[in-house]
Length: 123
Image 1: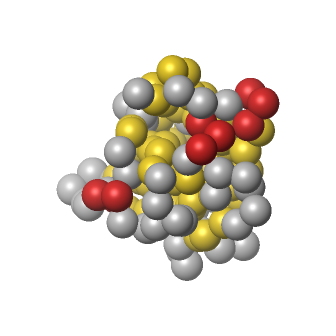
Image 2: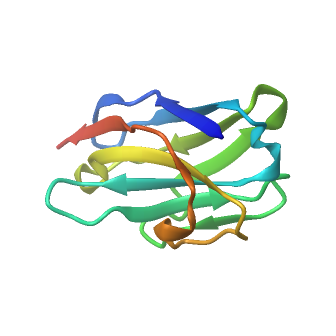
């Protein structure tokens, strides 16, 4: 079992930045692809970004390319999501999740989930 805990959310003005963290306990995170998803009120949970177990490959949703950067520190069992140039439409609860699959964007392929952290971007 892998337990995931997100942190770093908050309220920020449009154009600002936030850095989210996803810390793992239990089994090592080193074996897993880790993804970030988000869910806005009344909307489906959507893929944001993912990173392979060794950090050698990443994948991003088109809506965040060039603005968000995913990275990981396996020694700390932590995955980060650096978010810049934030927009009001980025407002959502952000979840991290782990999977054995290769950089999948399909949320059903992720076996382990955190409880999420709220990000609110004001205009």
